[in-house]
Length: 220
Image 1 (cartoon, rainbow, N blue to C red):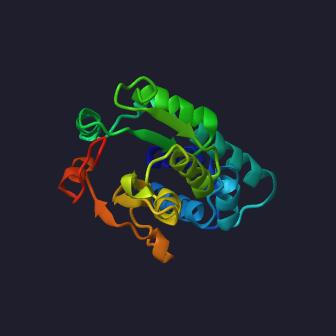
Image 2: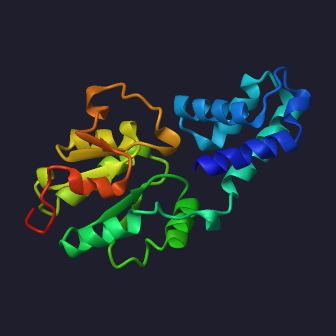
């Protein structure tokens, strides 16, 4: 996701943002501003319009630049995506220990489906299922987690791992599940605003799951 934001920022600069804006921003600062606006309001469809407005642009020029940024973000080639280095070995080990693994992903459906396909998660022998929540953020993830509970497992036997404190971490805690936050990436600097956004544990690498005080397995 961070790479797609950078790709969109480059497109804005190529389209002439700095020729028209009241403030001239280098790429790094433009990316930071874009991410800050996204965190303020997680609406990707309006993000570029809000960005150019923040820089004092209005009218046709603003609309043209916003379209350029929006198109670039949503056309970022997902073929460049890859799993974290320790992701596949971690999934393999959990699977061997009898853990059922589900993937929940939020975002524009066609892009999320493409990402899952490129990463091979749709055909991985270690993944029991993939759920697409659309652009519902935490609300959609909570709904799917609640649906999983309806199948019988005790919530204290469910471990949710994610990087968004205000989304999957909070949804897990609201449902009484264990929550582990992976620190890094686009949401690394997000500070919890509510006690339920605080995870039970934090880690930087997925393989560190096995250092936590859990017994993994079908009966764990």
